[in-house]
Amino acid sequence: MSEKVRHPEKVNKPINPIKKKPEWIRSKIIDSKVFFQTKQVVNKNNLVTVCEEANCPNITECWSKKHATFMIMGDTCTRACAFCDVKTGKPTDLDIFEPAKISTAVKSLNLKHVVITSVDRDDLDDGGSEHFYKVVKATREKNPTTSIEVLTPDFLRKGEAYKKILQADLDVFNHNIETVPRLYTKVRPGARYFSSLELLKNAKLFNKKVFTKSGIMVGLGENKEEIIQVMDDLRSADVDFITIGQYLQPSAKHHPLNRYYHPEEFKELESIAKIKGFLLVSSSPLTRSSYHADEDFRKLQDARNKQLECHQHQ
Image (cartoon, rainbow, N blue to C red):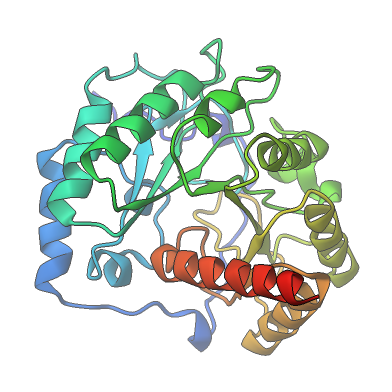
C-alpha cells in the first residue's frame, strides 16, 4: 500500500530547486536530556506539535529548554498554503480529550509559557473556536501561573467566532499575516490579507488587556517597501509585537525561495519596526512565531509597564 501523499494539492506543481543555505542559517544541534524528556511527554500524551509538523529549524534548541508549541485539532489542515509543510486534506473529528491532554502536558513539562496553535478547520461551523476555548480554559485551570499564547487561524467567513477564544483567560493573541498583500494569491491563496488584519484589530478591541502579535516571512519575493507597508498596517491594527523571519522552502514543490536575507538586513528591519512603535520586535534569520516566546512575553510585559509609567508622568 503506497504512503498517503502529504500535499496532494502540490503533486502537479512545478519543481523549484531548493537553494543552498548560507552559513548564518544553520540551526543549532543540541544533544540534551531535556530534549528527549520533552519528546517523551509529547509522545506519551499523543500530542501534535507544530515544531515537528512544520519542520521547524529550532526544534532541538526549543525542546532542550522545554519550549514546545502544541498544535490542536489534528495534524491535517483544510488550507493549502504554498509555504507550509503541515499536511493538507480532510481532517478527522475533534479529540474531546485534547483539552485534558494539553493541560496535563503543560503541567508535566512545568512550562512557564505555552503556545497553542492549530490547523485551519474550515470544515467546522466555528472554525474550531469553541474547541480552542476549551483547551485554553483547561490549561489555565491546571496551570494558573503559566502564561498562555494562542496562534490562531484567520476564522475567515466564520463571523465573530474568534471572540470565543478571547473569552478564555489568555495572555497573547497571535495571528500571522505571513506575507505582503501582492503575494497572497500565490503564497496564501485560501486567506485574505485584510481579513487577517481585521482579525488582529478586532481581537485588541474585544480584549484590550491581551497582547496582540503577528509575523511575516521574508524571501518569498517581496520588496522592502512592501514589508514596511505591512508594518504600518499592523500598527494601524494596534498590534504590539511583530516577528520577522527567513522563509525556508520545505520541498521542491513548495513556493520557491526568492532569496536569503543577510543578518544585517534583519537588523535594519528590526530598527524600522521599532521606530514604527511596536512594543517588541523579533527579527532574525531563524526567528519563528513561537521562537523564544516565553522570554519575549516577559519583555512584552516590561515594555507595556514602561509605556504606562511614561503616560502617568506626562
